[in-house]
Image (tube, rainbow, N blue to C red; front, side):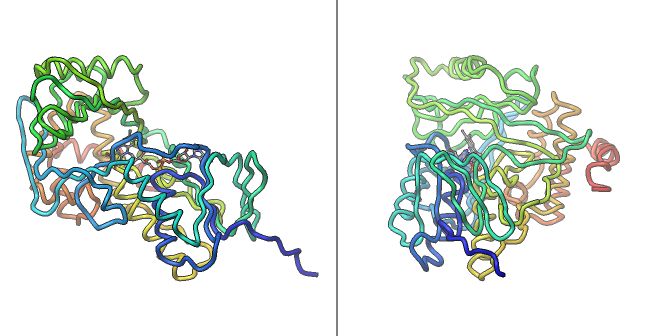
Length: 393
Ligand SMILES: Cc1cc2nc3c(=O)[nH]c(=O)nc-3n(C[C@H](O)[C@H](O)[C@H](O)COP(=O)(O)OP(=O)(O)OC[C@H]3O[C@@H](n4cnc5c(N)ncnc54)[C@H](O)[C@@H]3O)c2cc1C
C-alpha cells in the first residue's frame, strides 16, 4: 500500500523575508514562475523595511542594482597616524539602501505568479519529515517540498577550543552636522584613532554630503556593549572633527558573526540554510551582502536545473576560510595590534588584490599578499598553533 498523498502548501517555503530570503525569492520569481503559489515566503514582521546599510565593493551584478544609492570611488583607512587612501578603477565601494531593497524585492515578489509573501507569520518549528517539510506556525501547519531557513542570526557550529567566535558589534547614526566636515567622495572604512582598550575598535564613515554621513562606532570582540558606549564614541568622534550641532536622522545597530568555527553539516536535506544562517558573513570582515547574493544565485540555479533536493553549496572556499582563520586568530592573540595590522594591510597590499581578497575572488597570490600584513614569524606561529583548526576536521 502506498503512502497517503499530502497536499503541499507550496513547493518551497522561504522562512524569513530578510536579505537572503527575499534575494532567493526574487531569483525564483525571475526564473521559473511555473505555477501560482509555487514559492511561499513567511516572516513574523508586518512591516518589512530598511533598518540597515549594506555596502560592499562592486562585484557581479545582482537583481537589486536599482537599490544602490551611493558609490565611493575612493576609500581610506586611518591607522597609527597614517591616512591610507586607495581606489580601484571599476570597483567602487557601493551602498545598497535597504529600504529600496525591500521595495524592489517586494514589488517583484508581489507581481510574480509563482511567489507569495505572507507577513505576520512566524515559524515555530521546521521539521524534515523525509518526503516533505513541516513548518509549524501560530496560524497552523505548512507543508512544502523544501524549506529555506533564512531566519538570520548565525549558523549552527561545531566550535573547537582554538576557534575564534567574535562578533562585529556596532551602533551607527546617520547625522546632519552644522559644519561641513565630511568629504563626499571618499568612504572611511576604518578610523582607528579611537581607544583600543577593549580590543579592535574603529569608526566607519560613509559620507552622503559634506554635512551628512553614516558614522558607526564599531568593535570586534566577544560581547556587545551598552548602546550608550557606542553613542559616546560617535559623539566623541564628531566633536573631535568639530561637527558643531548634530541632528540624528536615523540609527542602526548590529552584531555580525565573525567566527572561525566549522559549520555543522546539514542534517536535514530538505531544510536549506541561507544568509547568516548559512555562515554568509566573512569571518575577518563581517561582510555578508555580496556572499548572500552569490550563494542564493548558485542555489537558485540548482533549483532551476530541476534538482529536487538542493545539494550542499559552500558559501566560501576552504582556502579563504583558512586565511580568515589565521588572520582572526592573530588579531585575537594581539588585539591591540589591529591598527598596525589593518594599516599595513591597506598600505602594503595592492588595492586590486585587497578588494579581491575582501570579495573572496582572489587566488593564492592575493591571499599571500594579504598575509604579508601580519608579521611573517607570527603568521608561521599562528599556522602552527592553528593546525587544530584545519587538520582533523
Ligand atoms: C545594521 C547592520 C548593517 C550591516 N551592514 C552590512 C554591510 O554594510 N555590508 C554587508 O555585507 N553586510 C552587512 N550586514 C550583515 C548582513 O548583510 C545583514 O545582517 C543581512 O541582513 C543578513 O541577511 P539574512 O537574510 O541572513 O538575515 P536578516 O536580513 O536579518 O533576515 C532574517 C529574517 O528572518 C525573519 N525571521 C526571524 N525569525 C523568524 C521565524 N521564526 N520565522 C520566520 N521568519 C523569521 C526576520 O524577521 C528577518 O526578516 C549588516 C548587518 C546589520 C545588522
